Image 1 (cartoon, rainbow, N blue to C red):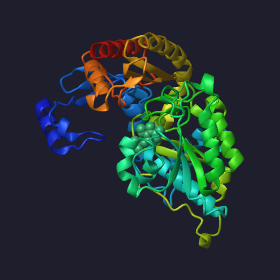
Image 2 (cartoon, rainbow, N blue to C red; image 1 turned 90 degrees about the vertical axis):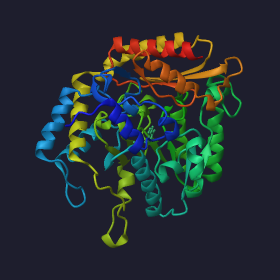
Image 3 (cartoon, helix red, strand yellow; image 1 turned 120 degrees about the vertical axis):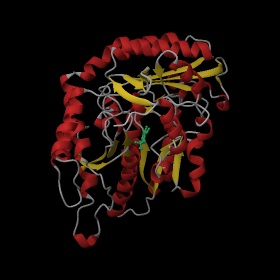
Image 4 (cartoon, helix red, strand yellow; image 1 turned 60 degrees about the vertical axis):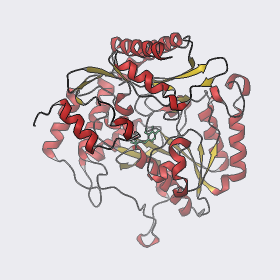
Length: 451
Ligand code: PLP
């Protein structure tokens, strides 16, 4: 491949590449870091400078960058078959992957519908839930119960079930109707509570009221289990998810869990629902499924959901949904090798001391004068910065305090990306203890310098 100078690449980037979730007017003012290589937990730019990948390349990377075994699995597969369709054909790797995943996903989730990214996995989940209700004779169940601060992706269906105003409000005229419940964001509880210890989760009572009144018009309830990621790494109190499952059972709602960010070890278990012994009716998976290598997603359903789609051809019970690259063999081959590495590296066991270390470092950071709240779940954390700790006054969002901290962290060789005023910790799961220390040192120094 031709070598280009950093200046050339930057100039073409400014001229031609429209970056996601980015004010391009600002982007064009700055010199972008151009990543050309990856090595373990490190990203390396066109000038050879190394950055710890503090967000696991948008929460996808599991075993590190350019892991030999994954590279080899990909090369091996590309020599045999790069792609064939699942429309009218089956393909070897997609079959084996579904069979393997069925062994590790919560018991009862057995039917895998492939797609390519988290948004479409959720889009599929929502359509599947609605069509399920239609086939079960309940076509009036057209709405969904969702949570404030929820993020399920950027396609219109995924936006409809999302709950972050700054991202979603513009698209309201295009969205279908949902009923939004209060999220258990204990640091800023909209019901006025101080925390789960004192309120016994009032938000659950509020949720039950909504479901009692509106549930019969809803196909399902959509939730990020344990952790609302893009909403600000908002961690749910223990017991919340289990009680949401009970409500769904009591009122006949399908429970759709979005494990796009939490799945594949992020919370310390393979899937977040396992912490609460919850089995959803439909579960969305993506990001870590192919270890951050290739776009792949799956929407997983129970036999009960799947069974509702069976019938005579003319009954039109077919699930009318599909994407060209559904079940792509390259992505499936990497996903299979990734599952193998989870076992051979004993990755989940190896996470435990790192999670413990992260907790210790976060506890120290909590004492900094402008750190208002720390939220931690497995290998994910959010550090919420505030102007005034006592009154929990947020920094005005236009001041971009979170962005400034992340820019400062780059001076210490750390790449992170904030969620508003919340600094995110979300490294590759395979990060070493020494690298995790460097990551936390960099973030701590940056917070101290900026706030
Ligand atoms: N669901 C959750 C919980 C996510 O965090 C994300 C992305 O951050 C998505 C869905 C959307 O995934 P994608 O960006 O692959 O469409």
